[in-house]
Image 1 (cartoon, rainbow, N blue to C red):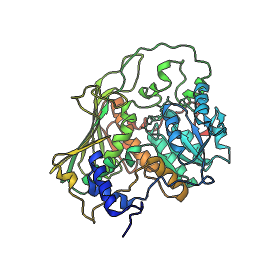
Image 2: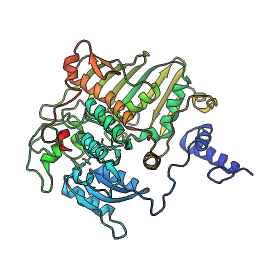
Image 3: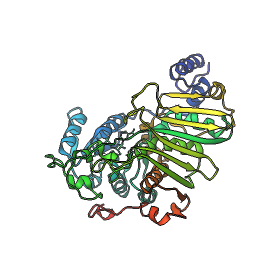
Length: 448
Ligand SMILES: NC(=O)c1ccc[n+]([C@@H]2O[C@H](COP(=O)([O-])OP(=O)(O)OC[C@H]3O[C@@H](n4cnc5c(N)ncnc54)[C@H](O)[C@@H]3O)[C@@H](O)[C@H]2O)c1
């Protein structure tokens, strides 16, 4: 009897595929093909084969990512500019009597030869300097999305990662989610005919304020937290979690959720970037409050004529949770000459069931496959191959979000040269001023 790589019989394997198909809504043909194609990403490592990991940025996502990374390595160091957060991480990652070493300055982490891997989940305005410092120190990084604060940062970081031959996985985990990959493969293989439009819905951001300043909380190094961003008094809403609704540190839900769904749209379209972007602001920020645009309607045009529309929805909350069950969910709708496909976390549907249930032929275009984003990273740490969301993927997908955020700032139509990564034509000089930002000293590239 022939056995499957997982050492189960073909009959049990097919039963597994049918059961999984029923549970996930994914077609059995895809699950079966996938299992034959992708080796399990979570191959257990031996006790002496576990990389030493440092967590930089010990907030909500950082502690979640590091917990996930513990399947493959040991958290030996934790670093944060807020003592409270670093202490919480020490508590969480103390294991078998071993306590991770505490750091408040990530540059000291990079000096340690006994640390191999960095999990990086600082606010967006710190991503590049931490990732860049890691590359210089020859450390591999799982770095949270959006990979950068500006397009220029992405260009520099891509070079640094390649020059130093390090591995960087962008934390855009939808690339390792089967539903999104299947949707992209179906689109790429013409299952909905000629792709004409992708409509993306992102949760609307927060629109609130004005906010008052207050004394800096004990244990927080506010100047270090602000880093390259302008020096301002401490305002609670500018700090933990809600930093993402300020243009100084991020770009609102356009860069936060956009880093996920715009990445998937780009994967399906298969091009580096659009040639045009036009943006409409649907709700103005409140003076003295969050500065990123909370409600928007943005249209990109790609060189092959495909339109990508990115709209905010108030029917899902900022965490993607349902506000209005009959309303518009966040996700992506691909429309073509012969039908449509809708995909979001936990849901894949199409204008006709056969679009999904009919197997793609053996000679169909297949996309790179990963079913475990963190596992794929650690596999690549060992094999030295590129992970699924390698630095250029993170950079180019973040760039789409940045283009939209720039068009929203300038409230106008702009033309983009994706090869040269520069705006061209009317409004180009004004727009190009946002491709890079002035970094407040000492927190520029000289800092690392
Ligand atoms: N992949 C996903 O689905 C996902 C989900 C949530 C958040 N994220 C990303 O993770 C990142 C962090 O988000 P969060 O919600 O955890 O934010 P958070 O505010 O909870 O955590 C950020 C942490 O970074 C620390 N920090 C700030 N500057 C630092 C520095 N220079 N050195 C070390 N630590 C520093 C802060 O003190 C804080 O503890 C964001 O970029 C966000 O987009 C990704």
